[in-house]
Image (cartoon, rainbow, N blue to C red; front, side):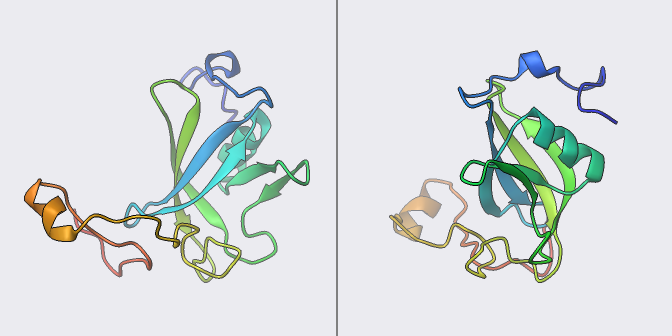
Length: 141
């Protein structure tokens, strides 16, 4: 199935950046953790849907790459959403292999804390506070 089927948006409806790319936020389907951010052009998006494995465009190497093709930590596609402006993607995946998204061996690329509010102030405001350094064993529904 090509991404341009009647059920999905046409290429012209996406707002690609000047390099023809969309930011793709990769999220663990099991727990909602953000694993990494990559970039996709229309071809990478099609390859992802067709193979059901996440494919990116490498801005540095100027080539397509499938996550996990060398490490074994493949991202198996669950779903793809696009945002209200059609300029970013949210890609839900089931991590394969050892489940490590980052080239450093970490579960997520987002492990460097820049700032954090005190948990009690956030919970008092109604926000749910949760750290996502490692995947949960179960899923709350």
